[in-house]
Image (tube, rainbow, N blue to C red; front, side, top):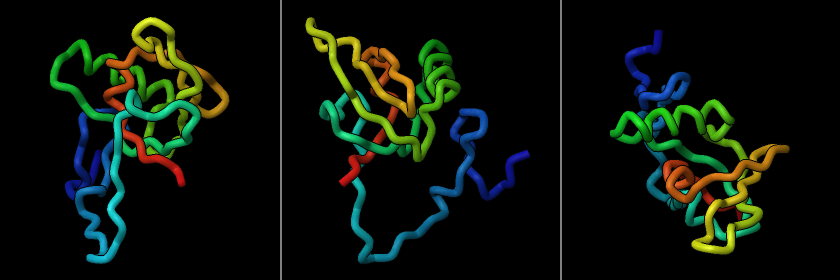
Length: 113
C-alpha cells in the first residue's frame, strides 16, 4: 500500500513525493520537454511519464513504463524516419526502440548538460 503522503500518478510503481519537495528559492529551474521534441543525438533523463485520459493511450503508456521509460533513465533519439520523421529510434540503456511521435509525447525529459 502506498503511504498517504505519496501521490499516485496512475502507473503501478510510480507513486512519488515529487509534489512534496519544496526547492530553495534560488534553485535553478529545470525545463522538461517531451521526448518527441528532443534533438537527435542529445542525451536526456526521463523526468516523468504522463498518464493520459483515454484508455487506449493509458495502455500504451503502461507498456512504455514496462519497457523501462521511467524517471532517471537516460535516453536519446538516435535516428528519425525520412517521411514525416517517424518513427523515432530511441536509445534506452542498451536497447533501441522505435516509437511513434505520439507515443514519445507522453515521456517528459530534461537535457543533460
